[in-house]
Image (cartoon, rainbow, N blue to C red; front, side, top):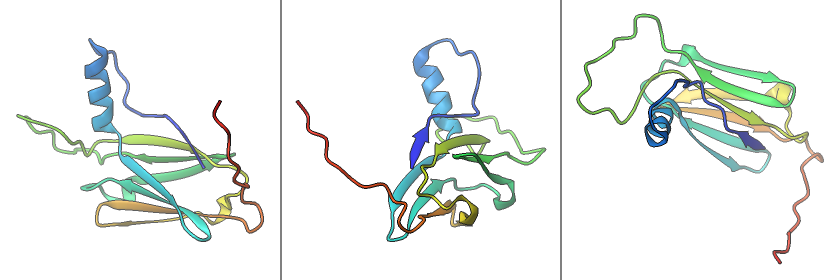
Length: 131
């Protein structure tokens, strides 16, 4: 399971730090852990609507995106550290993932994506020496 940096937030921002801050507001945090027979992906996205998430597999890439509903209220923010706006994240899967049986559920603000491992296809782990 590999992560490709991808974000739907685009724009021409004045300085690099502001650009990174704005992109981080548009992106949902993701944690991935390995369970006995799968990789489990937790997409932290509170305040969003389950029906507006989209998961697509194309080749060896899994894309998770969220599009806010039309007419979503825009507030006159004083301070804004979190956004419920749209995002897109792309992950590259290796040959050990059973893409046809990926499943997802959205509970308590967390989208949990289960990526089952094909028995016998898991990549062997090996240590790399540092010189």
